[in-house]
Image (cartoon, rainbow, N blue to C red):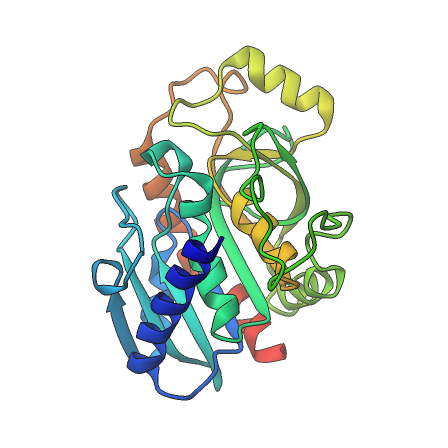
Length: 274
């Protein structure tokens, strides 16, 4: 644990040197094809992951690989323009390391986004979904191992992992913008393979509305650290077996590109209300 704490402190100290003494209000984790939001940040300070001590490096198309600090609607934010995934070969502690750094920097609210496959048959590609709960089908947990007592308890409560007030704020913002937004349960799977039709059937039966390869590990660490979390999924495609067509990452990037204006408007609207 001392080694991990030292890595967190070195990384956060490096980021502080770049951004000065200003504390970001919100941490943003931007999923596949959703990194355009970082381009909306005014007076940006960009920090390559490669320059931050102990930081992993993004390897997936659609993930820029940098932190961006600045303002959105007058609020200081720190955005991850690109994230890390378990399927890239990183451990879950490595995947969630940036969340620890955000907490060390004083960030208390995290907005985490992703591109996800729609399981709920009423959903359509291009729609946005506010996450109100999740299912961990990664069958592992980034909190396994020694506990970081300085950050949170050994057995954190996840009955409200996604902050109800932030969910309501997102729904109200969507209403103000006349956006048709969904709510639902997000299911985490490790990837990198897409789900099989049989797995989609199981997911439907247990109550999942969308499935993806990220988010849940970061949320678990954020909750452990006492951060308030809002999760937003972009339904980039329908899950395997729902439509008679193959799945591919290019479709994910294409769909998130089409919905980027709605996505950006929603997140900026939420931040303005914080």
